[in-house]
Image (cartoon, rainbow, N blue to C red; front, side, top):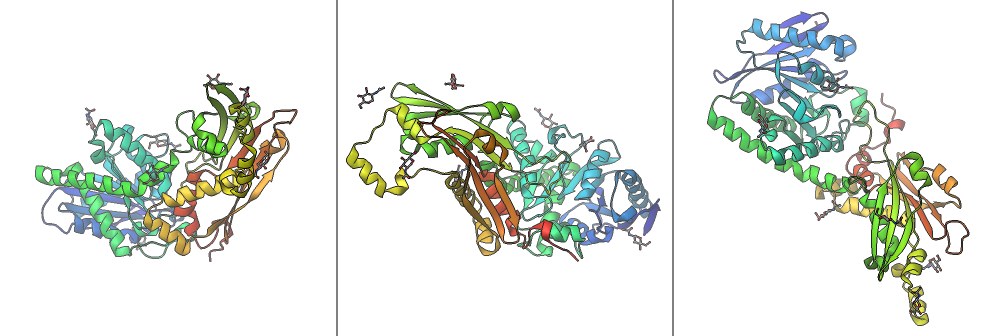
Length: 483
Ligand SMILES: *[C@@H]1O[C@H](CO)[C@@H](O)[C@H](O)[C@H]1NC(C)=O
Ligand SMILES: *[C@@H]1O[C@H](CO)[C@@H](O)[C@H](O)[C@H]1NC(C)=O
Ligand SMILES: *[C@@H]1O[C@H](CO)[C@@H](O)[C@H](O)[C@H]1NC(C)=O
Ligand SMILES: *[C@@H]1O[C@H](CO)[C@@H](O)[C@H](O)[C@H]1NC(C)=O
Ligand SMILES: *[C@@H]1O[C@H](CO)[C@@H](O)[C@H](O)[C@H]1NC(C)=O
Ligand SMILES: *[C@@H]1O[C@H](CO)[C@@H](O)[C@H](O)[C@H]1NC(C)=O
Ligand SMILES: *[C@@H]1O[C@H](CO)[C@@H](O)[C@H](O)[C@H]1NC(C)=O
C-alpha cells in the first residue's frame, strides 16, 4: 500500500506475528537510497522479534534524499499509512540510515516517535546519549567506510562512562558494533556512488548482517516495549552481552585513542620524550602540557635537576581536522601531534652522565641501543603500537589488502619558525600513506635554546584509524572516479 504526503510516500509491510506488542518501525533511508532498499533489513527485524512488528518504508524524497523539510511529513504520512493498514498502538519507532539519521534524530525528540534506531548514523556531538529524551539504539558496522567505527567509538566511550554509574543506560541508549559489516549492509541492493566510493569490503554476507541487525533491534524493541517481564529480562541480558561483545572492537581503539589526550596532557608526547631519553628514562620525571596556538608556539621545554634525577617539562599541540558539521567521513584521530622535548644530550648533561671512554667505544657498535631517536623512529613506533593493538582480524585484513604506510626521513629545520610552519607530511595516495616527521634539534653549544628536540609526529590513533579503516579502500577516495 502506498500513502503519499507531499512527495514522500511509504510502503507498508504487515506484521508476521499474530500476537505480541504492536510496534511500528518507520524507516528513513540514507541519501540517494530508495525506501525499498530496506525491505530485507525490516524483514530480518520482523523475523527476529517476538512482537507484532509493522513496517513503513518511507521513500520518494525530493532528490531521493531525506531532508529536514520533508522529515516530519514523511513520519506523519507513515503513521497514517500504518493506521490505515490496521495498526492500533502508538508504539512508533524511527529507524534511520546514514544521512536519514542526521535529520531524524533532532525531529524525533519532539514527535510521536517513542524511540529511535540509528543505522550507521549517530547523535551529533553536542547531544549526549544520556540527555537525548527518547531511547536510542546506535548500530555501527565494523567495516563501515562512511560512518567510521572510530566515530561510533566516541559514543560507546560515552555510554561506558554513563553505564558505570547507571547500568540501565545500556538498555535505554545501547551502542552496538556489528562485527564484519559495512555501511551498505544496513540496506540492500545497488548503492549510490558516494557509498561505493567510501564503503569498505564487508567480512560477512548481507544475509548475516541483516540477521545481526534483526537480533540487535529486536532486543532493543523488547526492552523498550515488552510488557512480559521474562522477555524484557532476556532482552536486557542480550543487550548487556552485545555491549560487552562490541567492546572487543571498540576498546582496542579507545585504548590507543587515550594516548592522544588525557585531560591537559598528551601521554603520547610523554612517551616520545621517554624514547629520546632512552636508558636514562628511569631517572627522569616527564611532564607534558597541551597548549593551543600562540601559547604552544612560544612555549619551550625545560629540564631541571632534582636529586639524582631530572624533571623534564614538555609541551604539545594536538591538532585535529576541522569538522564543524561532525561528518563521519572525516577522521576522528588527530592530524598531527607536535611535541617540544629536551634532547638526549641535554638530559645527559643535567644527569651529569659521562660514560667511560671504553664504554663509549662499545656504544658506537651498539647503534640501536644508543641510537639518536628521530621523529621517524617515533612515527614507526606509533605505527607498530597501532598494529599490535588492533584486533587479530583487523591485523589480518590490513596485511592482506591494506595499503601500507611509508615513513620518510625527517624534514629537519634550523629555526623554530621554520619548524612551526611545516606541518607533518601525511599524504594518502592509491599506493598508501606517506608520513614524514618534522624535526628541530639544537646542539648543547647552540647560542639560542641549546638542547631542544622538537618533533611533529603521527598520532598512534591516526595510524590505527588508517589500519582499521582508511587503508582498506582500494583507492584514495579523493582520486577514485566512480562511474
Ligand atoms: C516511490 O514511488 C513509486 C512510484 O510512485 C512507488 O512505486 C514506490 O512504491 C514508492 N516507494 C516508496 C518507498 O514509497
Ligand atoms: C544536534 O542534535 C540535537 C538533538 O538531536 C539537535 O537538537 C541539534 O539541532 C543538532 N545540532 C546540529 C548542529 O545539527
Ligand atoms: C538510570 O537511568 C534510567 C534511564 O536509563 C533512569 O530512568 C533512572 O532514573 C536512572 N537511575 C538513577 C539512579 O539515576
Ligand atoms: C595495547 O594492548 C595491550 C594488550 O591488550 C594492552 O595491555 C595495552 O594497554 C594496550 N595499549 C594501549 C595504549 O591501548
Ligand atoms: C615543570 O612543571 C612543573 C609542574 O607543572 C612545575 O612545578 C615546574 O616549575 C616546571 N619547571 C620548570 C623548569 O618550568
Ligand atoms: C659530575 O660528575 C663528576 C664525576 O662523576 C663530578 O666530579 C662532578 O662534580 C659532577 N658535576 C656536578 C655538577 O654534579
Ligand atoms: C647522537 O648525537 C650526538 C650529538 O647530539 C652525537 O655526538 C652522537 O655521535 C650521536 N650518536 C649516534 C649513535 O649517532
